[in-house]
Image (cartoon, rainbow, N blue to C red; front, top):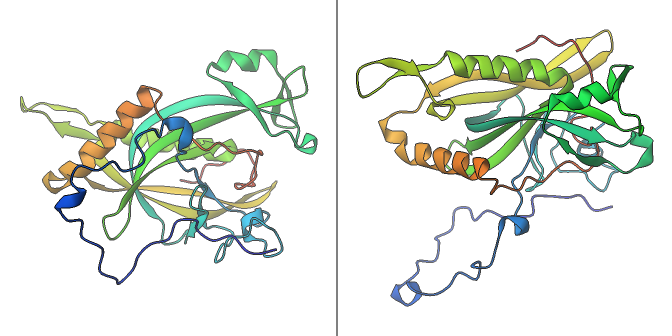
Length: 266
């Protein structure tokens, strides 16, 4: 099967067309686009068994390997050691219901309350519902990515299973950050006031080995980053207004591959 590459091309080393005044008042052709027509990509860590790293799979992405960071919309990868810079904008927790893997039915929906676990029985590390589906606690981080050239994009990072420890530590790091307000008082900093570096790290326990997220504080936003700050605030507002549609995983573990517990590596 042919390999999949990024669906969106980038113009490199070419002079871009300059729009003259005749274009000032024309429509873009995108006026009727709504959130239902767009999808915010998921950023996920690829594993050895992810289809994107298998050259014989139709989902293969050129250059992908275990530990790569995968963009689900662009179908592109970033080296996990190099990592990506992100500005977190919003956070939410959900309890995702999955059909059994061998059913081929994938994701069945989301529950917002942890109380859904009261309807489950714990078996082999999974929360199983009476209907045979199971629940995965998942932390979602809505972020702005910033590359070395200053280009930005919106994305969502889901963390579940072993990566929930990373999620808790990341949230704790955010809550520890402070700023001086207009009154000269030191106050908790909004989560979008700092950049973080996300890489991937190899991990293992008695259940196996896999790649997970590595999260570190990179730098605070400065006076030169006002445009980034505005982007982050706008994305936060869109998420809170439910104006963001995420491209959800269709199959549990389709890209992340790891379902191990008891992880403590940051």
